[in-house]
Length: 148
Image (cartoon, rainbow, N blue to C red; front, side):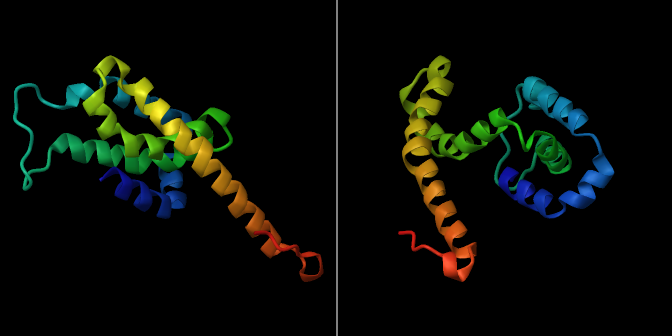
């Protein structure tokens, strides 16, 4: 749900930024949601079945949809935001496996440690290679160098 909402939000980012405006307010709203989000899940109620959708899930998805473009504009040049972005998908790939092997108190540390080699040894070198190829293809024909 969140990846789909993020993609749709990105496609409508210009319109959403006109409605929402302040990236700082969106960052504050998302911070509050992260800190207090557990309270949205009613205590003592069973998890929803396949045919049920929790109103809190719809609320969280809607908040993401309307806040992501403004927050991205606010933090797009921030180095910490870039590092978080680089690690988010590798952590997503590893987190379920890590959950089975580590205590909850070590979950975040172990997930980051498992994701780090993927970022450093695979993603960053691949990005450098891809950028070199793109740069070589956009240069003037007489000054192009073959990059393998």
